Length: 222
Image 1 (tube, helix red, strand yellow):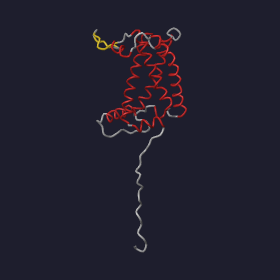
Image 2 (tube, helix red, strand yellow):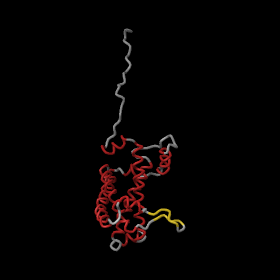
Image 3 (spheres, rainbow, N blue to C red):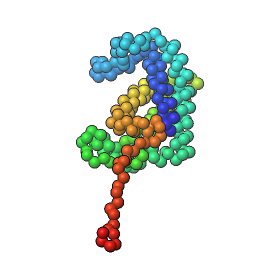
Image 4 (tube, rainbow, N blue to C red):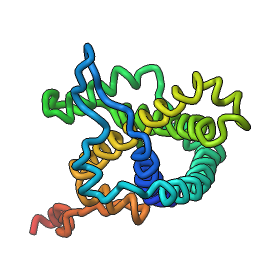
């Protein structure tokens, strides 16, 4: 599980970066209300700072190559959770959504008592399950955009080519938001938790002074 986690990090980073290079060729999405544009994805200064323009072919090459590593890594992760039984610790249960709200209140220091937690708390169960669903959604919408004629049924399932492209873009924004929240949570959890995700074990500091058992009085009273 740790291997697929760390392998996925650079793969997803390259996928998002190369996707941005592709998106620049037709950056039509923006937030509009009553005909007024409040935000355009992305401002020209964003492209100038990252030197994004005129790299469409490069973006497509990287995107179509690393999408296979993204898919293979995702399949290995899902297979492992099924075979090992780890899915029982990851899937949300009927109490997860209620407890996730309590986790949020605790993280915001509004609620003092932490909600019950096993290996993963309720918010983590929901987030980690959602990211798997998002990965499947990226695969489906990506194939619908990549080969809209050959995978015409997938394109139809997504609501058409344009809808598939919008959904693919929204999922990418979701990955970025998940990444930001994930990093913040890692920082809040502390170095020991981060180290355990790398090494596979957690270091527990114990009191080096051994407890001294009280001595029983001698039988003769001395």
